[in-house]
Length: 179
Image (cartoon, rainbow, N blue to C red; front, side, top):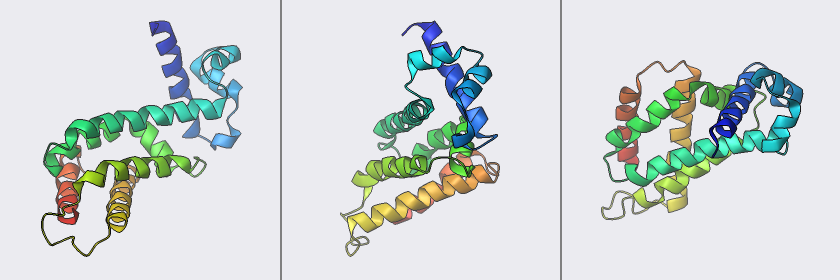
């Protein structure tokens, strides 16, 4: 992809997240996004159908990047595998704090994030030992997925009080007990 196109798309994505941290998504106009990104309104329509398409593409990018991490992270121990995730959340704090903590944010993000983690956890349930024998897969996946997203939300809403490595260690221990 042309670097100018990438630069424009990044500016638009950054602009929409910055604006969402200031006001409800429904109140944001295409002109607001264009002004913040320092582009013409028409430029937005060259790349996206509307502000909803822009937000959807932004969410999709983050969900896909997290999914790519899951492809190699499943080979590691929990605590080690979770470090890159928490570092990713830290690097993308503005996005995740806006999407998880803002009142005016479309709720579809949390649902999509939860679904992606549940999908990633599907192969992790310990069926070799007896400890999860009486637990239904759907219940186990909902419980752990919801807990994981909840901890991420708590961590971000509270200004990331522990470093990513400590969060990975703590959450890894808890997930290891569950699965």
